[in-house]
Length: 71
Image (cartoon, rainbow, N blue to C red; front, side, top):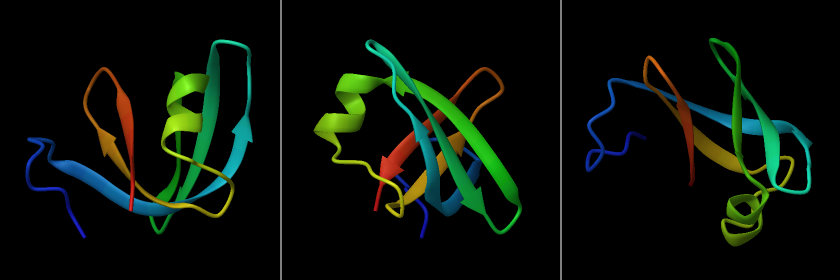
């Protein structure tokens, strides 16, 4: 699955394998068939997206950032 509404070429489907939660920002590690991708997003976003270990996500990779979308 790809997200067509977002203009990002590098999209990697995977599962969250680790979350390191901080008071403001948190680190999400996503396991993909191509290796792991790590993203730092706000802890509030993790809660609003209801992300947890095992969640299916798409890592959207740009040259300066990695975004996460819940499937």
